Structure formats: structure tokens, C-alpha cells
Image (cartoon, rainbow, N blue to C red):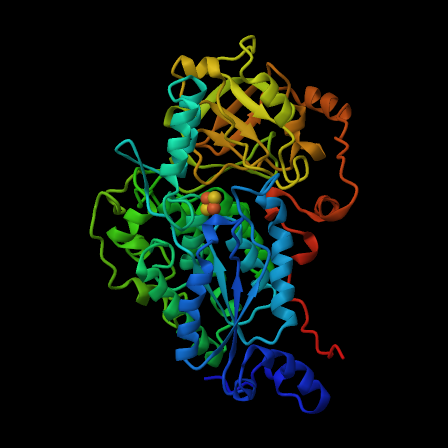
Length: 572
Ligand code: FES
């Protein structure tokens, strides 16, 4: 047990004028003096509550349960807001602001008198932004996720966010009317919580559980289930102990923890966004991780959780079947079971008694839900620094495919042409979308799983090979190559593809190549003109100046590396 003086006493333990200034204004909230004497660790509650982030709109209520636990364990909770990123509302994409939010979190924690932190995360980017920011300060830190929504019901069928893509196609070809779509949207989001499938939000909640940053079952207890509040209460009790044990983030976020997380992500068929966020977190805490690690550690793990979009069911169902502990137990022979977690126990101890209650939901290594899962990392002349594809969401027959390129120069070009009946395209073509990478379309939006042309949908075509330097929603699916690096806007080879070129995708051999001669490549490279981006001020300008590429996590170069120094001086 650490005997270290509490960090908060650097503020509240002062005498004279400094002490008055740090304590007096706090007392206007009715807080008695003994809370400031260093007996009780100050626990910051980093809350992403916002009515504009509907997935986190229940966080005020959840924070109350968390506070009860903190008080019970002898801590002193102080809640503070940070920038909240609502995936469904923020334009052009919440990812543009992930790094900004992480800076808010980092500086809010570092600048304030707290000994430990609970990060309240839910909607997609609210988890990585908070974990990245907190990792750069490295206090004892525990993540509490908000939990998934209850599954929606539409005309007798279970539905969730991953069905949007199918509904959109049905609407496009007239199988659903606008009135039907309004009924769909009302049925889909019927409770508090984040998206119901294993989209990016649940992938992130599973990521923190696998990393050891959250208590067992954090990822799957539904938001509306009373056990979510029990989890919050227990999280509150535990963070107080973590401060006493000085269990800082760097003791949990080891290389083993990252490897575990990659394997678990394969087992659940997690979102491709996981790659960007985990890479960024690793670089914040100083752990070496590169794109090949994602392929290497996930290649031996099949799909264990039968959850959408890779499987059939929902995260709520996964909780009833045993949750993440039961999934992890199925792959435990591959995991580093000695990795320590926030509850002070190892991953191995946490999952040792986990049971599977429904084999429709949780497969085994011998009888998985699908044999191929994880992340395929592609290399080749089209993506020298890598590109990724999620095999469990792809069409098996397209994983080895050569086709004629149909090129869209940017998202506007795509929108203008895709449904044009005269577009020269068939189901064997390869759709190429340029200029949607980190700089080309600042923030790298989720447009990589671009919808198929209407005329092919009407013929019954369900999937085609699609390639871009953008991202895909965690709820998306298809034979979609993403995160091509370097991106086209800065002159990556994707910028050089022309209509009619042949592109060869070979997922079994992990390659992606443009079938043109080296001489032709060079000629095109010489005539490449970089896009002039119309952003000259504000945050977007900073983003364009400092953001790195997809294979590096799309973080700002100046935020990676070791923690920033504590500010020792007083403000007065
Ligand atoms: Fe918030 Fe999906 S929109 S998790």
C-alpha cells in the first residue's frame, strides 16, 4: 500500500493565502472542511454527459451511483464536464474532434486537484478521447462505460444500428417508404445507452475491459439494466482503493494488455476503428504497437461472439450469455492471463469462473461462430504503409478478387455519380474513393463502406470490393478496404488510380496492388498535384498541420510520447 502524499494536497493542503484560495470557493458548494484535509482521496469524475450525445444522456444518473460508491469507500468525488462527442450529430465527423477532446481531458485532469479519475465513456469517440487524455497524465484511472441500448424491435424483428445500411438500401430501391423509415428510427432507439450492435461504442467498451481498465462486465450490461448502476457503485468503491494502491494507468497498460485487447477484439468481431484508437492510446502511454501487431495477434483468434455486425445477435444478448468474461475465457489459452486489471486482480482471475449460458451467442475455439475474424492488414503498391479489412464482415468470395477500378475523386464526386444510370460499373468492379483520409476530409469520416450503385442494388448485388483512405462505421459491413496509408490527399498511391485500372485484392496473402507498370506509376506520380484544402484558421487548421496518418493512430504528433510534466506553480 502506497504511503504517498495525496496529489490533491498540493492544492488543498496549503496554509495561508494559497490554502484559502484553493479551498474557500469549493466550500460554497456546502462541502465541510474535513474533506480537504487529505484523509479522503479526491476522485475526479470525468463526465461526457450531454443532450447532444444521446448515447451518454443518462450519465448524470449514472454518476450519482458512482458517487455513492466513492463516498462509501472513503473518497471525495468531484465531477467535471469535458467535451462530449455525439457520433450521430457532430459534423463533419466526431473523429475530427477526438484529439481536441483528449486535450481537454488531459489538461482538465492535470490542472486540477484530483488523486484518481473515473472516465465516463459511451458514444464511440468518448472512450478513446478520454483514455488518450488520461493516459497522458497517468493517474490511477478507471473507465466506466454507459452500456448498450436495449435492442430495438421493428415489425416483429430485432433491430439495431447495423440495420441502418440495409434499411437505407431498401429505401433507395423503394421497398420502404419515408413513413416506414420514421417508424424504423423510433423503434431502433428505444432506451438509454449507446448503439446495440458491436459497433465502435461497444468495441471501445470491450477494449477497455480487455485492457484491464474497466471492471468485468463493463462492456455488455445494458444501460437500462439496474446492474449498470451497481457496476458504477462498485467502480466508485474501487477507484478509491486504486489511489491507495497507487495503481496508475501505466501499470495496467502494458504491452501484454494491448496484445490481449487485440485478441479480444478479434473474438468479438470489433470495429476497424479499434485499430486507430488503440494505436493512439499505445503511443500516448509509450507502448510500441504497429499495424502488423493487429494482424499477428488477431490471426489466431476466430469469431467467438455471435454479435452484429459480424454475427447475428446484440450486445445485450451477449451479456445474458455470459458477457466479455465468458468470451475471454474461451480464448484464454492465447491471452496473457497475468495482466493486471483495475480491480487488482489479473485477467485470468477475473475470467476463471466465467460461464457461457448460451452457445448460440458464444462459440469456442473448436467451434467458433466464424473461422476468420480479426483484422487483415494489407500491404502493396497501393498502400505502402498499410490498409485494413475486416474479414468477418466481408464476403468470402471477394477476399481474392481482381477488378476494374471505378474511381470517385472525393465524396462529392461519389454522391454525384454513384446512382447515375450511365455510370460504367458492374458487380465485378472495384469502387475507389479518394480524399477521405485524415487530411483529405479532415477527421477521416466513416464513408469507406460507400453504398452500392442503385442499378446494382436493383439487380440484387449485395457487396462489392470498395477501397478508400477513409474509415467505416463499426456497424458497417462488406468487402471494404479502409485506412489506406499514406492517404491520397498527400500523394499516396491511391491518388494515382484511374478509371479502368486493374486492382488486385488478395486477403489470404495480405496484399493490395494496382496492376500498372512501375514506369506508369512514376509518370502519374510526377503529375500529381496535392489538393489545396480551404482551411486557414481555428482547430481544423491545427488538425491539418499536426495530424499523423492512419497507421500512426490519426493523433497529433505533439501529443504522443511520455506524459506531460505536472505544473507545480500556483496560479496566485
Ligand atoms: Fe453513439 Fe452509436 S451513435 S454509439
